[in-house]
Image (cartoon, rainbow, N blue to C red; front, side, top):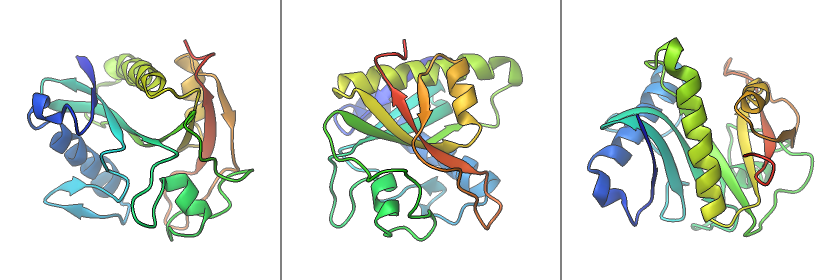
Length: 196
């Protein structure tokens, strides 16, 4: 099992790994969670999968076990910035605009995490090890991107899980319920200085 941070600069070094991340996201979010989101050729993607982002991957060779996307809060692509801010501005129909307690930040010190998942194919006895690998690499990557905090939209019970793997997490918004029965979620702050 390995952890890798993929970017547009290094993805050529890892063969099909980035495409496999998008395939694993398709399985997780479209096939299993039944989200109505963009896909093509069995890969899930959106407007935030840009050269500004990084993809943290836990994998065994080319088999993706878990992943998360990191995007600078200073990112911009056309009318879009980053998912949480765009939802707050009303640009995303699928996420409530009242997802944060305060205005979404734009700062070189803050990175957004999104599309976090652990594959349902990961055996129960390996899940904690996979989660710790994912979170450790996410924190290291965010720090390499000069972040001090991470703002993420995660399952509402994820804060408890995050603390179990050593993250300093605090709520950044209310619990969001979705009409389609999707797992309740909430925005959280992850303070990197304390998450080691």
